[in-house]
Image (cartoon, rainbow, N blue to C red; front, side, top):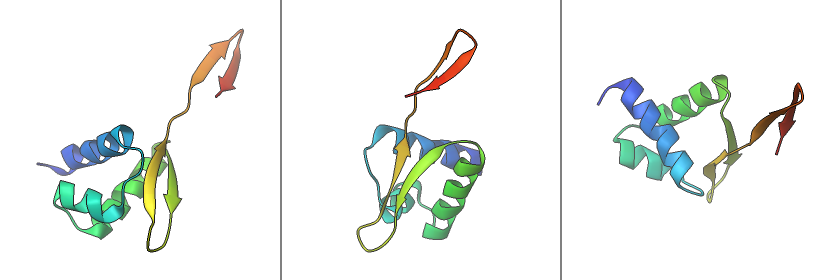
Length: 77
């Protein structure tokens, strides 16, 4: 599996689960924790919003937002 495939799988994992630890993601992708952290930074750079809880019971959670264009206005929910 290439880097792009693993990055897309990272996004898919966050999209399909409520909360996920860095260790769980790293094990599933078969990469280091540092690589998962790099994927997180890449996702943030591309506009994804990730809730990050640090510490022993920390997790990543993808924040899903609904964007609606209504009468030339962009609405966020």
